[in-house]
Image (cartoon, rainbow, N blue to C red; front, top):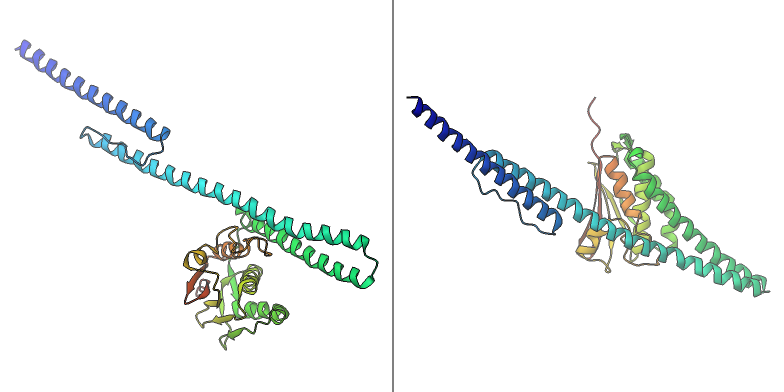
Length: 297
């Protein structure tokens, strides 16, 4: 009888030892696979040869983390590429007006005609203003995208802020021979937002429209509080329009454009818990701004 018990215990021990060995081999196999996945650029997944549910669950969880890591890696590489493009674009944009300013300063030193000097001085003043706008955009982007500068939305009279932005751009529209078609609700429109941030958003959108408009501009606000901006943009297509809100993306380098204006507008809108979209339809660039409703008290 005792021999039978000993035999059973021995068999059980051997079975358990086999299970432990199998688990050990499985862990070793998963460890080897994980090292290979981390070392090589591959999208293959970790597999488990055993049917043990815990081992399979471990492999599944590791695969989820690997996919997350790959997504972060892709995002990092894209960000690195964007940064390189940003340095190139910004360097080009800053160098152009600086070169012009330097050239006209040299011409002024040699020029004795007061009329010519005033002409050169006006060019220098225009290029200096371009530099000021570019550096202001760079500062604004750094300032507004910091986590410590998150905007707290509050009840905002969106219709009044838009009217003021359009009034501020009246002289710019006139100088560019743009007669905008404006359609606003008769009653006041309130939404959750921030007045200063919204002023910046509208200003950046209108500035972009002035740069790339072919002489037309339509602004429409619905009674639901949505704001639409549209203008003919033959230089655009669906792909380019989808990238307009990205950092540093600009259609034309060296054309008074750092590619930050609409990106700042989108960042501010999202901080107000709203949404800013750019689409291309029927030869027109269409930008839609939406802000959340004011909660009922």
